[in-house]
Image (cartoon, rainbow over all chains, first blue to last red; front, side):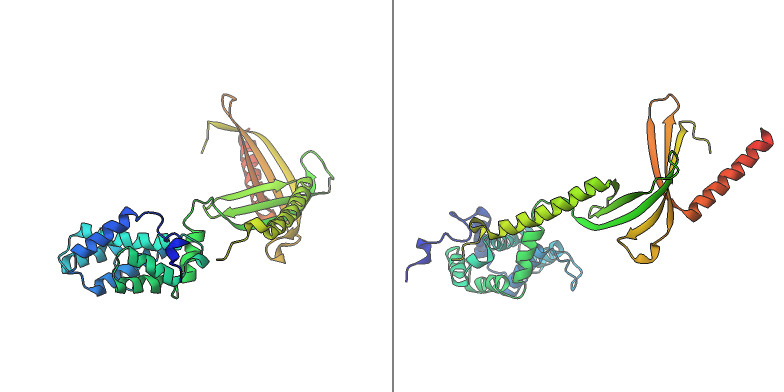
Length: 223
Length: 77
């Protein structure tokens, strides 16, 4: 059975990132830290990525780290390095597409990084556990630079009967109102000619989207 | 309540009937007035347009206030 090192790079890249090597080094130094605390740190790093507020305990992650540092008499800097290393491992693991990360290869790579078996189990449970889809979703949707979204779109069709200058002009009048996620409300009038152009462009866009879906080059290569 | 910086220069209006709506249909047939007030600053540099859209009741309230103001002006004029 060929070693996976021959055909696949480890998930963390060509060289061990400094964050992770520092984390492992600190873990070895602070071996007074019980595994339960490590477990809590791992679940906190998952919550960090999901950006959940810890609703059960009403303390932020920094307060939990301060509590650990007091209870187990380890300096807060060491704890921060360890926590940072955990979050980094999770982020690197979530970087390749979901199908590329196989669980035994992932565990092997973690062993190469010199993490202990319990920690490897903990990481494995997070990445292949219940929150897996949610984690990938968050990385896809939230953690990249994006413009504000269109939240709601209302339109209003009126018929103009009279104006100040014309006394009998039966003319359609179309208004659009866009609400965006950054609380802007954009209201504008649309001449009927532009509205027909908008309809044409929407139909063209839908057709192009379907064509792009069919192109071979954009399909994901599943190993 | 005087605003010495801006003066009303133009008052343009448009009267329309609502035919269709993306929200619920209970607003069909409601009449609406679209006003555009143009103000200009005193030294004639800045023209600002103020577009408004008022329902009929709001417009009647506005006309009522304007007529009250006109009556007062006629007393002293």
